[in-house]
Amino acid sequence: MKKLLLILLILAGAVYWGMSEGNDISKGVDKPRTPKAVAAKGSAPSQEQKSEKDGMVELIKDISNTIFNGISKEATPAGTAETAAPKSTDKEKNISEKIPTRQEAAAEVESLQQKWNNVAHFTTALESRIDRKKFVPGDQIPDLLKKGIVATEDRRYYDHGAIDLIGVGRAIITNAIAGHTMEGGSTIAQQTVKNIFLSNERTMERKVEELALAMQLEKYYSKDQILEIYLNTIYFGHGAYGVGPASRTYFGKEPKDLDLSQCAMLAGLPQAPSAYDPLDHPQEGAKRMTMVLALMAQEGYITPEQAAQSALNLWLK
Image (cartoon, rainbow, N blue to C red; front, side):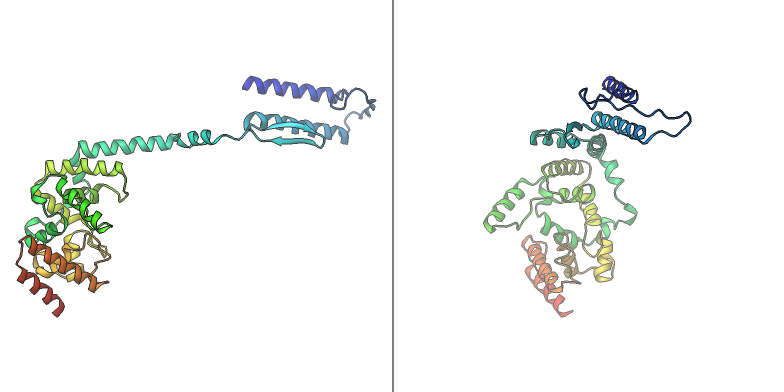
């Protein structure tokens, strides 16, 4: 390319030299040449000489543009016209769009390395993302709140590992019968790692990553430890992450002082914090709390009488 540019520049210089010497090669040989007036020594260049030099500068610029911008100049009766390079085909465009830039490639490599580190050095990655100084210890979280979470979010929590195949199958059947999503198949372990490590995008890649991280969580932490991490990191709405801020936000008290109805209210929030928010949507929040109480009674954590009395107490407050 450099050699071609050099040749074209030399050619342009030769054309300019010929024009300045009176060899007007751009006009043909049939027309008589008009002698140029000889400028006096030290006098300013004539208008014709200026025009020739300006034209030569433009010619050299055109040649440079042809080389570097892929635009060709072809002679026309009116002068020169620009002809764009042939348009690339759709196939070529698709290929070019799929080729990542250097920055994109570097970012992708860094992302893959981070994902690998999260799995290979799981405990280090997890602990670096949570603030245990702000944790409410497991022994200060009401047992009724823990049972409400298990009954609502993952009722076979203590019977399966990172993945609940029975729960997934049940959710598929329930959702198919209902015609829309009523149950999810995610375990508390999956929800915990998703909340700490991942985004909310629904892709197969993200789901695989979630499963890998959930398996590591179940490997290195006990069920009670996982439930403690979950309750201290999950979003309860109104800007409250974790059971401590949620308890103070909604009830103005510490978690250890919550009663049954309040535990049921908090247990129902993680699935849809905005929709069941008892401050902004008290009726929807109360309905959700009543459902959680019913689920707790169904699992045998409380009696049906306790469930009914707690729901009634809420309405009387």
